[in-house]
Image: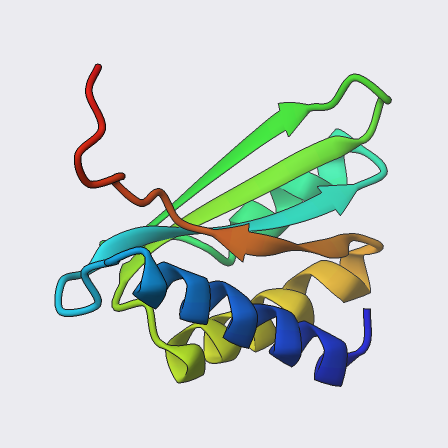
Length: 113
């Protein structure tokens, strides 16, 4: 995905979050995703994502590839998300991985269990 297209995707997601009443004044765990061809490279990438506000999880996918999920507790801002994407790509791409986007859980107002 090109950088310009990805920026448009992030802008669109953030706009929909705002329209849905997302609480941008609070920090949230933002999930960033990557895919690797093997477990060793996915685990090697996790060494770069440790810290008080970071958590990394590696799982096998049904297709035999390996999924890396990095959670970063942060404010959901365009600049902050873009900066972390850049940092993550600088680790993932040299290891043969593919950056696979980001997401955040948003509570739906008025939803009943």
